[in-house]
Amino acid sequence: MSTTATARPRRADAARNRELILRSAHDAFAEHGVSASLDDVARAAGVGPGTLYRHFPNRDALVLAVIDEGLSDLHGRGTRLLEAADPVGALREWLQAYIEQGAIFKGLAATLASPPHPDDNTDSTCHLARSAGAALIDRAISQGVVRDDVTVQDVMDMAAAITWVGDQPDRDAAQRHRLLEVLVDGLRTGGP
Image (cartoon, rainbow, N blue to C red; front, side, top):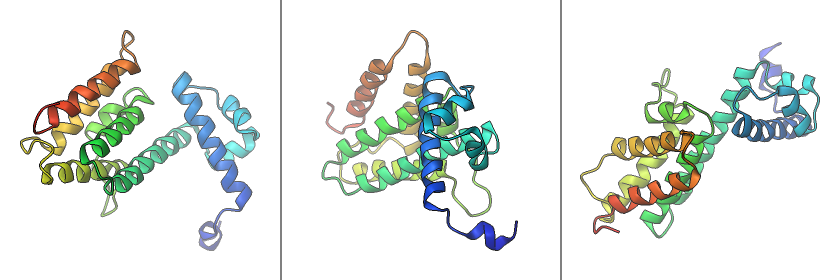
């Protein structure tokens, strides 16, 4: 395929099919893990297996695309939340989304806590997502509503730990939510 052909924008139906596949894969992976049937993913998206494989040549490509999309959403959400009136509320909302993203796939929490260094000068979506969280933390610290003795790494490590706890068989999403509230209350300058 020539460079010109790969640079062309996707047709509207192809872009729609890709989005449907990503949404279906996200749901299937969240429910059944990354070994979920790709035929079931295609069926849920309303496309044939050939369409799925045209967009994602193998399972790894599909899994990475689902993760990448979630991290891009985290970055966008963090950027929008920088405009919120309540810095602690904005940070809580972003951390909730971060924890939910980390809980989608087993092992993802560890990657979010210590993402690999991006190649060259480009930022990976993992780094972009973390940078959005860092900006929210820095904003809350600068406004004096979050303790100034914590670092971005401290907060991200605690959020990753909450995600890990929620992955344990005897734990659930309600406990993740409760632990998030404990974390946010502990970050406040004046306590809860």
